[in-house]
Amino acid sequence: MISHTPITLEKLYLDCVDAQGNAWIGCSLKVQWLWLTLHLHQSLVSKNGALEIHFARTKTAPEIQLDPDVLNYACQLFEVRSKPWAMPPLLETLYAHRRKRIIWNCLHPHAALEVNLNEKTTLSGQGMWSG
Image (tube, rainbow, N blue to C red):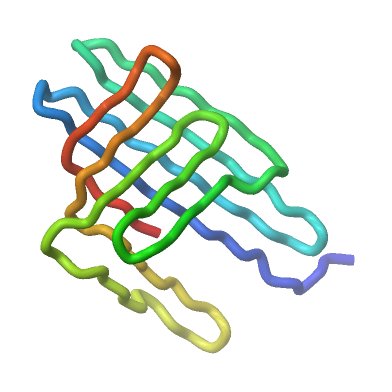
C-alpha cells in the first residue's frame, strides 16, 4: 500500500565569492517522509582553477544559529558564518495550491560570508544565504 503522507523537503543554498575570484556553493537538504529524516549536504568549491565536489548524507541535523545579526550553519562538510549587509530578508510564496506550497526564504540576500571547508580551506567574501 502506498502512503499518501506528504514528503517534506527543506533546502538551504549558500554561495560565496572571495576577492581572488574563488567560488563556493553549498547546499543542504532535509527530507522527511513518515518516520524517515535524512540530511544531505553538498559542497562545490572552485579555487585557483581546481574544482572540488563533496557530498555527505547523515541522519544528524546540522547546527544552526539564527539571530538578526549573524547566521551560523555547521554540517559535516562546511561551516558558514554570515553577516547581513544592507538588504533585508526576502520571503516569497512561489507556488501555492491546496496543501502544496513552495516558499522562498532568502535570509541574507547580500551578505559577508566566512566559509570553513576544512582545516586548510577558508573563503571570505560576498554571498547569499537562502532557503
